[in-house]
Length: 253
Image 1 (cartoon, one colour):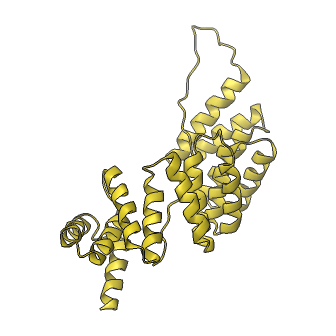
Image 2 (tube, rainbow, N blue to C red):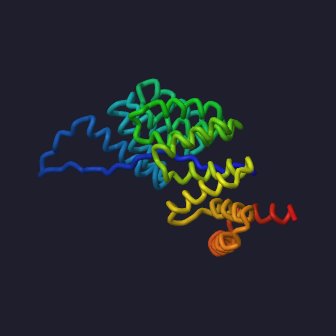
Image 3 (tube, one colour):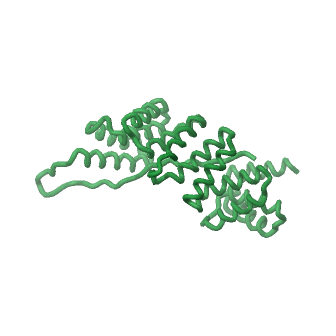
């Protein structure tokens, strides 16, 4: 079965603080001003306002053109607007100037989006080696997703397992392990991973419900199959993943 994957990009949004105090202008620390501009730019990136994002980043670059945070934010803008060569140059420069694991993670996500999976996996692996990185569990998930795309299922499984050691309810890791187990014919393992996913999910995705149906059919669990099919038809009937799966089911009959 084809693997479906979702990669997470780390974009932290921060609030802007306007500094005023009476009629006299308050001197602003350059680093504080830079952080405010980058924070504003990230807010604009979050809502797709590229012009205002660039305007604030240009003002931040006037303060410190060698700031890794400024260069990374520029890279995100360029990536989202299809200027991929400029995005890569900005990521490369940010990392060369000391950018940390968050920037490295976002560069790896950029490589993944470009279909450069082996390069992406190599960079994600470097991120997972940073034991102080607060997004380390997700970095292991991202590494696993990249490895799946290269066909390295064994190492992908190991990466998802590492993620679950740090974050036992990570939904992506649990679903990917469910999919791997199903593909390998290990329905018991698939069922265990899927149950762990269900216990932590507020609302199951279409893909999760489909995996649940396939497990239910293997185990002759008519109640689970009926329950998941009902939700699929009510919530996801018009989605591309449900339509593709339904068409595949018809072809197999």
